[in-house]
Image 1 (tube, chains in turn brown, green):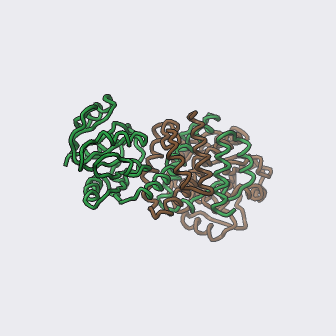
Image 2: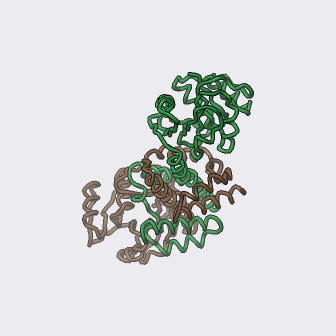
Image 3: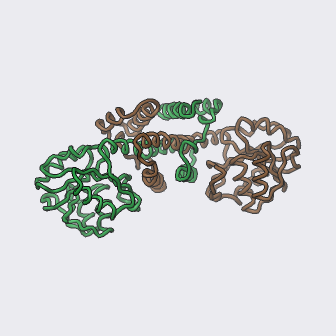
Length: 249
Length: 249
């Protein structure tokens, strides 16, 4: 089976690498950014092109959500299988006379960071059983966690990830602003952060909650509000309100 | 030097254990809850009492913030050193004719979880150089990260920890609510969460930000708001607003 990856960003790079590491052949990596494509091509030994899309049985589109539709129109071949890798788009966003599917890896990717692909969950949606088997076969070579998922379900998966990943990272940014303001190295907080995450591998986050809000420590809550302002104060109030609601305080 | 730990909760247990593992002698563990004290006493082979506080040179109070003041009055000995372990209290909260100090371990403790004490930062505040040396000597036996810290600075350390630990955990709780509502196992998100945290060991959280808000993806932001309600919707709006402000979007 001939497979082409379209895109040259973080998802394209890591997916291409996962294919190569698991000896799944790739016919081409296709995109606009020649510099990035060349780099991936040289590292992974895959042909690349910026203008001529290789004839293939499967195209996996790894571009930003806003570009998926336009990029999908570049595939003029009929009766092939096309997958996008977005958490929030339906497979019907793809525009062409081919079979449509979604191949969503739930992970945050940066080019410079090595990843254990075995642990990345893949969520798959296809039009028929045959395509499902094709994408499951590929995904299960890469990862231990492969599941079917409708667009409806994928929306919630993506939303959960926004809370558990994007918002968590933003809390780290705001936390670092506070520690920076007092010349306290943010590195000092890494063991605490690691332990916070380690805990939820073993117990439910709801049972692991600590801090002034869950023990309704009015003195500390007031003191903290006096130290804060702007967006961080808004976050402080919103999070504490939500914690109190969850624990009915 | 005779040292007594007062308290029988998570902090008392782990601090006592860190002492024992580093062969720093403990004369007694003192508290109200006989059952907990007995358990710690048996595991760590330290005498315990619920009524007679042992005569000592150093008392370390490991009780909840609200109880520190009252517990500190139980120490009637003069010219000894007393430390509390709270992130948010001044050393002056201690009431007695002894030398006052703060010995603050920055970590989230649960009895059932093993910890690498070497990685826990300790923040120390004392009245004089002699006491500082005493507490530094103990802390540096336990941990690689020991620093002096005023009450003022400690308040900000504690506040940073609330953002980076307590609020992060609450985001996990709200995320799990969303995934539970769709029968998606929350375990699927653990690799993503691990990677989110692993990233900030290597790059600044501000540079690691991903997600719909930082790329100002209005379509996804609106879609997500339609899926949410109540506290989670409030968190969604507040966090996105803060992300947009930080990146001037």
